[in-house]
Image (cartoon, rainbow, N blue to C red):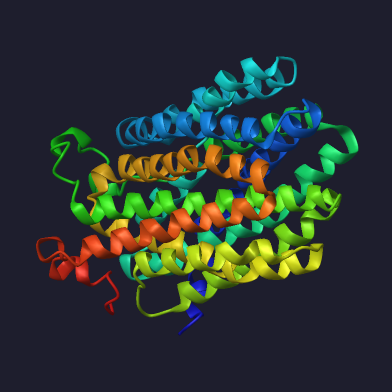
Amino acid sequence: MAFSGYARLWADKSVRTMFVAAFFARIPAMASPLVLTLYVVDGLDRSYAEAGVLAAASTIGIAIGAPWRGRLIDRLGMRRAIGPSIVAVLVLYPLATVVSYAWLIPIALLMGLFLIPIFSIVRLALTVMVGEDQRRTAFAADGVMAEASFIIGPAVGALIVTSAGGGPALIAIGVCEAIAGFLFLWLNPPTRSAARTERPAEHVDPGSWVSVPLVFLFVISAGTMATLIGTDLGIVAELRELDAVGSVWIAYGLWGLSSLIGGLLYGALDRSLRPTYLLLALGLTTIPVGLGTEVWSLSLWVIPTGFLCAPTMTAAGEWIAKLVPEERRGEAMGWQGTAFTLGGAASSPLIGAAIDGVGAWGGFVVGGSIATVIALGAWGGQLIPRWRPTPEQATIDGGRR
């Protein structure tokens, strides 16, 4: 295990600048789900199941928009692909504060459709800006920066909601997301290597880059999101039951900090770990989080599952970058985003209904169980002989580089 790779990355000014920009750009996006949930449950006096419907609508929008936006980045470049998103967030978030719940559903769908794809942009840029031997460390560093944003985002969102209300918080998120878009327009990080910028993406057969291992990675990504949503909604529900929403920063902070540490350690490894194993461990550690019945016990229970969040997402992204040719990585990253969001869309109503029916602990059990079942299913599928990885794929399937 070596941490010198992080120092080499940080010494590169262009990489360092992009990491810092991504850190600030992700804060409003990390705050958005919590703020929208609190706005629906407290501001509109609706149920968690109804808040889950909005989360599902948003994730369906992302599922539709992410591959489309990724392919636009592949074909047209980053600036032309995200311009419409900047306009959309400036309109949709303020509009959400003045409409009824029924109108919030299509608005949430559009919020997801036009989400500024910071994750895909950064991961694409990193595959161009760093060598393959540094890719795991770079992805892990990006995951760590994302976790740092996650520690701050929900806490700031909850603070604005409790002090100024859900409406002003949503407007603030829309403005900050637009600023993030302008920031990346200004930076314009590369998403294609110099040797290939003049070669059109269409020369790659649309189906030639799709493989069974890649499909497994998408399924694993969906399971990861189910677990994260179960933990996210479960934490909020538990704190509301305890009348301690103002302490959300403690639980979210420890959850994010443990994920940050896990990501740092994973990036320092000299080998990859199977995303299947990581997802299984993530699901199993999420199920018992509901045993925490006080602010501090809840916060301690989320540490083990948090420790596995960033490594699971990093490992999946690393595999995708290895298996997909550069001309299709934007679209592949978009499909991974779709997998994340489909996992969220399918699990959010179930998790919300479980919370409404049995209490906050139901969210942790449902989210963790979904991930566990998916991990076991994907693990079993990979044992089928004709689906075993090729020698090249095996280098990222737990083998040393």
